[in-house]
Image (cartoon, rainbow over all chains, first blue to last red; front, side, top):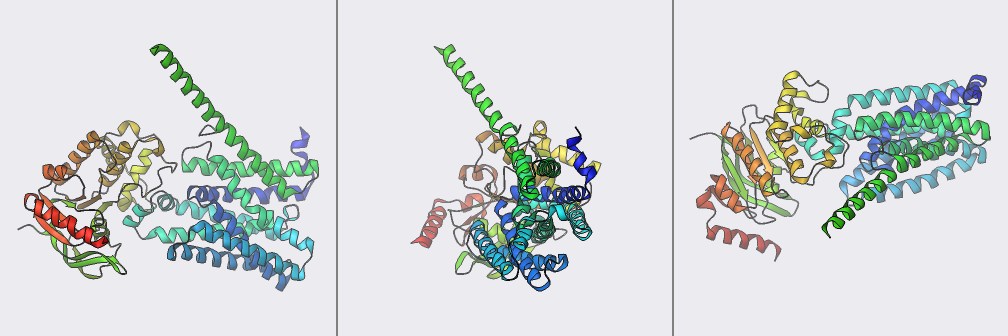
Length: 297
Length: 238
């Protein structure tokens, strides 16, 4: 029994890790739900990579400084977000194709820049985060960002839902559509930049998309999915940290893998379109059909 | 002579090189119910979008003379929105109250009453809690009508509202349109079914890239006019 909480009682770094990743998950999950609903799952990935060159430039100029890397990440993240939005509005290029191009280039540029000055340690730090080494500044950054994200999400919730569900309708009712879209992208970049401190640019998307994709199998309302995604992310953080402590493996992949297990469990057992349920319904239907045809004979 | 709800003067609409509507002049009278008919590519949807202000006129003018000068309530063609979005029917219909509740105001008791009334009027009262994705095509169209109804606008514009629904639903929803019209609303509907137009619409606008005829339905839907309209539109693609 003690194995489930003792690591967090004994070690400050475990408590910090849990606080940081849970704070991140609370905001990342709801954002992820909207990415899934807008069929922009890849977009989260692209944005997380878009942060990398900026972080790298911050690292080149100031070393492993939280401020420099955060500012750099925000700048490139926002640039790519707005560029991509413009590209998909102005050209017939499909959104996913331009995003794939953006993120592959960003990844290359980012890794190249970091390797100019840093070694493998720094590279690992940026790509996979330092969830077990969060200092006060990083913790404050993550919690502040998550709080702001949740508050702003609440403020724009109604128009954001309308923008996802029926953009034409929102357009006929108000001019808020584009504003809401940009605010949403801003929140996304903010959360990803804050999250890269915790899980790294490669892993941070996982805590955003996996709980959101899992929540889809349990709830038929957007609100329900957002709550479940946030809770699922917090649980994955806890389970992942615990596993990484006991099995002595890297923490951020363990967190993402826990979220992954959550996803696959939901995929199989979910009550809203999970495989198990679908199979059972199909069997019930064929049984009913065969009964009817036997009666007809 | 009654006032015009919407008047267009020598209006041309289109995108870049392609002109979809050319030199159209005329008016939708206040409290009238008008069918807009014409072959595919005749510019019917473009005209409605122009009235909504979504397409800037290449030339000419559109005047909206509603009491508060507000834009009409508009129902675009089906298939323009995400049917699988996780939301229940009541919340979906409630979107129609946007002009009064906006992004933050709560739904007052009056507003909730309106919502229930709209759901009842389209026959979806029992489906209020059902997820949107479980509705059939006809039920979905009813939900869209309920949402439109909640606007309480002076003018309603609908783009092919009956293209994907069965006869019974069409009859029910057509009755609703006539009720709105009887209550003094201006109604403009893009339609394909000429029999339906002849039965229910006193006014018709026949479009074919330009106005072919606009006025009393009997005067507009003559064999000569229809032939001319088909001819004009075919020419566009030759």
